[in-house]
Length: 269
Length: 243
Image (cartoon, rainbow over all chains, first blue to last red; front, side, top):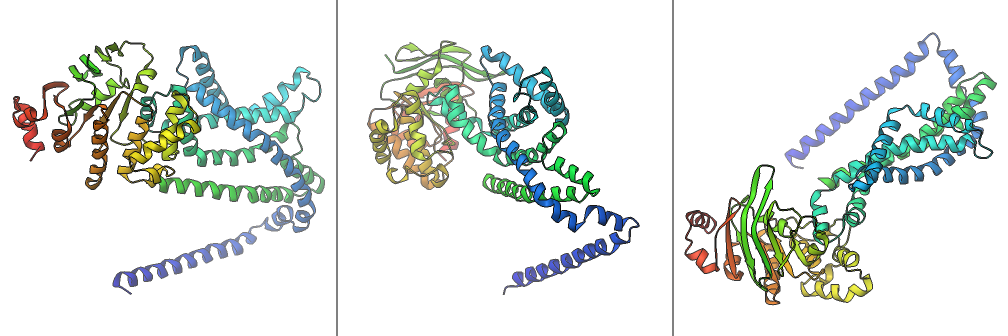
């Protein structure tokens, strides 16, 4: 072992010991101090009731299937619409000028209004036109609200991806005789999309959570179902159960997005 | 009739004049080398010939036909004039083969199958037969630059432009790329190259043009320009470059 290696091994041991001591101290403090709070026994009873959790969990899982369903049909629509909006905003031909204006207005409006407001306005407003079944379903219009809002964000991410492709790539493609359109489709977009995959993963995670906002206009998805149980059992534990179910999905997804992001950083170096 | 002719070409970026009235004729099969300090306008001139940069004034003729008319669709011209860049600019998401096939497929309207024999022959000719299915980041600088040359050649251009194509290469890789240029010259390709490789320019070029601040201040056969430069700026530049 060289001098240097001995020194580094010593440093590592030292860091490990400090990290362990500090973690144990913090966990112990929480474990012993929180129950000393005057309302702890009540909170424990109404938020962390094991019996209630076990009883309501299967139903919550079932309701979560509705979240997954809404997510699954909204996500592809968002990807397509987001990309179209991004392309519309970069359209150069004067004939497409209205499209550019539309793209800019679209992103400004839907990024500027709280999601819940869009859900309310579209989810209640459009069925209010007196559409016949099944066209008055809150599933359709709620999903549309999510699709519009998220497309606006996703479009901006695609645009940043398009900007991230070096202009020399465009020059090289143009110099071979390709048209602007072919350059975009064959050279710029494939690289742009690859560059923004990690950011778009984060949008997917956010979407998965925001599906719950549709509960306000009707669908009995997991958040609404937890609310039903809360009223029925006079206990908040179902909300904790719902949170656990979300975390089971979102933590791996978040980790994966971080992993992609880190890999991209390494590749860029 | 010269293959390529430039008459009083002016290019400005804002109020900076990069090409200041350049006249140049290139005959069929000729190799013309542009030399001069960095920033003298060599690269910009090549980009103007390929119509990647619109020119402010003057005209560019290819086979006697004015290709610099404002509003002219540049695509058909670019397909006839190939350009290779200092930084290779291969498409990183495509294999070498896909890089080469893209433009012929899209612009010449051929299928992969139709192109296969022709493109494979090109790869073989430039010693890249076993590299066709590699991605750019799996290739050395010299190999990438040769793929970039093959990519331009696959469009069957009439004129090739080379923009300091060895400047980004490790010294030991320069030779393999310059050899490619000698092969092309032997086959009668018309070429214009901007270069800092004075030894190569002297041996291979038919004509040397020395650029200074956007003007060609001296031109002629290599022996004349290198051995008996008449202009003081040329003398100073060569003294530094050949040291």
